[in-house]
Length: 239
Image (cartoon, rainbow, N blue to C red; front, side, top):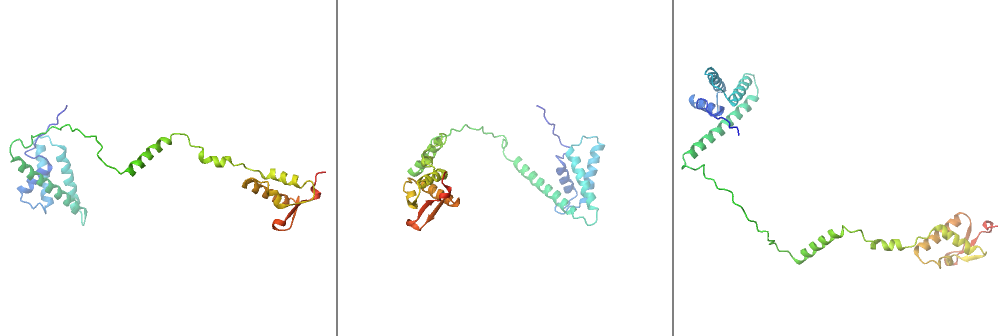
């Protein structure tokens, strides 16, 4: 496993650490940093590292590029971006300063503060189901479980039995039935055609058959209600 070499440059642990030391050295107000002075001194320090032929970490160069951009923006007239850039840099410096103070405080604690380790313990879980439910909930749960099993079976034919069992009577068969009743001649009571019907389907088919024959001018109906009589029109008798 490759180890990353970590080292300090002239006592600076990072670019923020260098900036804080420059602020402290020049007694600058961190809440109102004169950017021009701070940026110039930071860039001068970077150049000093180069003259001493010291290897500079990339984070120092990234901060140098960032500060150069801030300095360029600050030279522009009435540029609102400089305010935001300055606030971001100040916020990072304050956060880093707080971290340094906390690290210094932890370092004064008793030896071994950062070396105490507790190994993870194996936990044994109790798989006993301890919840209580009412009898109604258990009954509904049972029905739901049974229902899931039944859904795997083919559907029952019981709901369709009544529908399938009903005999469908065609209108054409009843047209033949009416003509046969009237073929011998004379008239018949219209109500007599319905007496032999055994189902609603047969009644409806007979009624529609009479309507079709009237429309085709094959039969004639005279009278009202129960007194109505139906007669086969002679001109349409079979020769």
